[in-house]
Length: 443
Ligand SMILES: NC(=O)c1ccc[n+]([C@@H]2O[C@H](COP(=O)([O-])OP(=O)(O)OC[C@H]3O[C@@H](n4cnc5c(N)ncnc54)[C@H](O)[C@@H]3O)[C@@H](O)[C@H]2O)c1
Image (cartoon, rainbow, N blue to C red; front, side):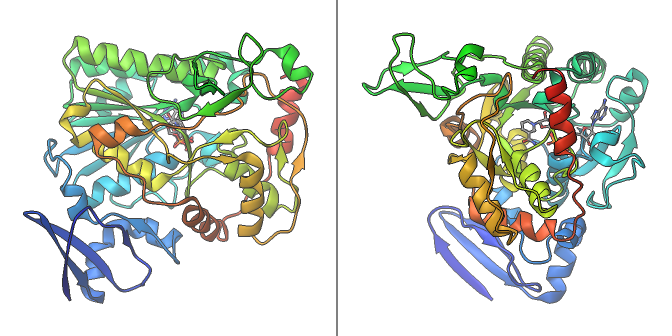
């Protein structure tokens, strides 16, 4: 079957188990084709892992739609993803393979993420070449860089709370690991380096007064948190409303993790410019989706809530639960990563990668409860964590304009997909233990 549409790019949803679509651009018109079972199986071979974990539904942009992006890096080139056995990296690997790249992953299979056995994750695409190694190991990294055309640097310890007491470990893996990688890249330069930064570098998001005056750099002190006065006010005591945060907001580093992400980002851009190696930093917001490490209490709040609910525990919420966050599907993030590789104008730039939407944490807990079919009321603890921010959500205007990034997975669709995936997963609720570790340190 062939069909034709005009106008903007089209969303592609594979709801049917035996049909898919491709889109071709023909002058201003887009030509679409629906493929039957045989062709579908061949085209979807690269997505074997994803299909296994997503029996009900998957979100995808056709390969041809992706090719409408700027193909600066030729297909069939070899791309290295450090930390590529993790959550985001594994999805980026799927996208790259589908676009015709060859993918190598360099990953230590950290036990906190992959369990004590440190096995190759079953979700990792079988076409990925996996090299086991630590990003701080010069020799192993140098080998991994052989014959590589571009690098995604995702290897990191990922946890705001944990970074406040595992300071040496976070600084070693995140900061020094990046330094070792960059030093190796000076010897073996690549056509593009894409580094994973984080919304955490902003600290608090951007605010404005009721009169519309922009306030950049407002924060809550410990005294304020002790009084449970959760919302921010200006120095003059005026109420502040959160607004979408653009890349121009002054960073405010409230945790060792945030400090390390900013260091990774700045160091990469600085060395990239000095050695004329095009480098892109992506500030991811709260990423969620299949392959998320559910047993790791330091990752996303959605995984934490899901883990608590599946173990029949109430999702525990800090403060009053009215803090706002930006949850972005890992599929949209993976697509942004491909764009960061391929769009020439992205070089030397920093981009927010979020959904452009925001929800309160309380709302998120309730929606997750409904999605997993558990009528368990969230526990609003009134507790707080040092370094936690009140509101932060993305302004994605720059990514839209320069990368051509457009998130396509709505929160409800993404949550449904996450829950479908969760049904096949065993989630061990380690949140209680993690909270105890923070509390023992007065954090
Ligand atoms: N998940 C999010 O919401 C989010 C938000 C902002 C930024 N980020 C950043 O995105 C990147 C990927 O995050 P993720 O959510 O996929 O995390 P993840 O923990 O699932 O993946 C990280 C991977 O890095 C590996 N790793 C850890 N230490 C390593 C080392 N010393 N050497 C080699 N590999 C090592 C782990 O084994 C893991 O596979 C990270 O840099 C993270 O800081 C993630």
